[in-house]
Image (cartoon, rainbow, N blue to C red; front, side, top):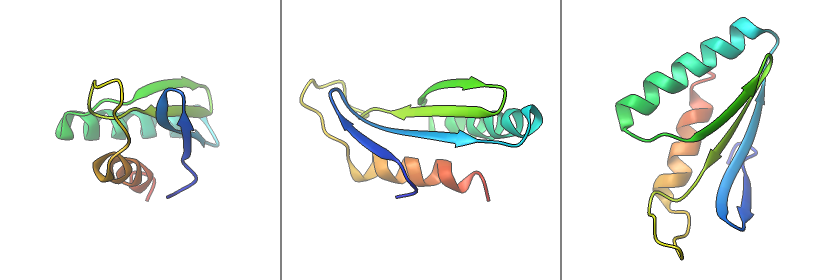
Length: 83
């Protein structure tokens, strides 16, 4: 699943995307923002000049929630933004 790391406490998926320039970083962030608005799902994001860190948490607020196929699909769709 595209090098996403699954963490257990709290349960989440994480991935770091690296880019050649600030312009490419911004382009990715713009695409991610547009896509997130379309699907009404918003990951946690931190970024710098040439990288973006994304954290996906279960869509449910339940304390015992686990990652679902929808969560994994969302991660794959984020990977697809780079194509």
